[in-house]
Amino acid sequence: MTSKLFLAASLLAFGVSFASASDFKLGSLEIDHAWSPATPKGAGVAAGYLTVTNKGADSDRLIGGSVAVAGNFTVHGMTTVDTVSKMRPLADGLEIKPGATVELKPGSFHLMFMDLRRPLAPGEHFKGTLVFAKAGSVDVEFDVRPIGSTSRSHDSMGHDAMPGTHGDHDHTH
Image 1 (tube, rainbow, N blue to C red):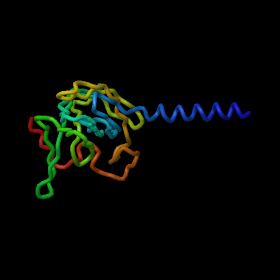
Image 2 (cartoon, one colour):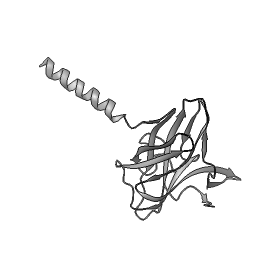
Image 3 (cartoon, rainbow, N blue to C red):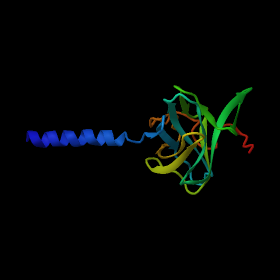
Image 4 (cartoon, rainbow, N blue to C red):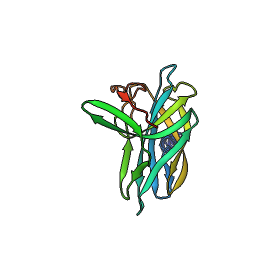
C-alpha cells in the first residue's frame, strides 16, 4: 500500500513539473507564461501575452514571429492620450534590456494575431514562434484563457483582453 501511495505521489509530482514546462529559453532569454484570451466566433484578431527576461549582458529586441492560428503577427505598444487608447505596431520591436523582465499584458505591450484562421477556445493551446533580433527564433506554445482574462491566471474579471475592446485601434502599418 505504501509503495502505491509513493508511486501516486511521484506521478503527481512529475505531472505538476511537466505542467509547468510551458516556459521557453533562447540563449540568455527566458520566455514565460505565453497566453491568449479566447475569441468570440467571427473575430479576426487576437492578442498574445507573455513575459521575457533577459539574463544576458546585452539588449535584444522582440521583432516579430508567427502563430499557427493567424496569418499575421506583430508586436504592439499601447499609449493613452486624453483617455483614448491607441495601439500601434512597434517598428523597431520591443527592447529587452540586460537584467530586465518585460511583461506583455493587456493595456500595455502585446502581440497581435491578425487574420485569425479560427476562433480560439478556452483550454486549448497553439504553437508559435518568437523572433528576436540577436538571439534568433524560439518555438513557444500559447495557452488560451477564457474571454475577459487579464493576466496569466484564469481570471475573468477584466475587460481589456477581449479582442475588439482595446479602445481606438489605430493600425498604422
